[in-house]
Image: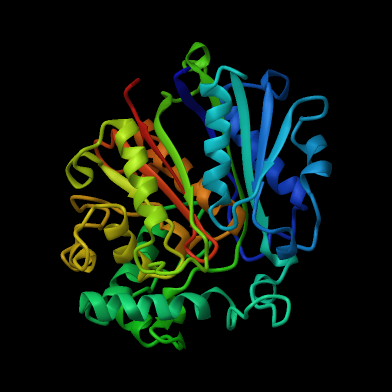
Length: 384
């Protein structure tokens, strides 16, 4: 198996509506920045891997076909990946496998979403008989899972507020972040409208336009970029049936198995002690403590205590989402890849004002659907 390096990373400025760009322009902006970071041109790329959320989110079927031209992929292998909200992560994993398998040496991977040209809330709330109702979008679906977590863990109400404040403060340090709220405070989040009990307005992710791209290479091209390469230490994806009998929506087995796999590949035996930081897919604030437990950073029922003690803060022992995370920018199809890219940026030392000092080993995490699709990778500053 070939060693895989990340030598180029690019992302757009995320916003409510990027009216200055079409979908093709959006992906090209991210891809151009990744190629520039990699010191490469379009002709240097051997293959392209594209990812986005369901086509019904934008009403554009199979957009990868017309995006081939914008991505310099005409005449080259182009593959589209689709695993709901986790797709950005799954897409990066497929791109990494393209290199690790020895099939291609220089792969461009891109993920995107242009929510301003769609209505994801409508798309996520189809009515019977087409499929069981999801009850007013993603928040309506996930709120009962959060209430069950609070009941099991006996977590106090302020934990979700603390996560929201932390990630929005971190987002102020990220020049690409969509939401920037200078006067964010505990009181401001606590007093924001309750949308789906216990999820308040400011505990929710935004709807964003945006894209993210990376250039992955074999070891032969690892030194071509403007910054030191990040190295892929492990990749994993898992899924489980949404309606599986006995399924635990609070602590899904697929997530635990995915983490165990990627840790084993990277030689991680103590996630809390060995991993320097994690970019975790947190679309609603309460998912931080839930995923801390699912990822093995905390024992079951104790994840909220790490948040409450400041462990997950930018200057804490285990920074979670130093970029501001999904709570600060949520172009759905790209949100997972942003987690992967931000983890790589940290170990390359190119995260700017939200850089974690001494970051050498980082986890990128994505989930999607009804917490049934998971994708993760572990990246390091040191060659494996």
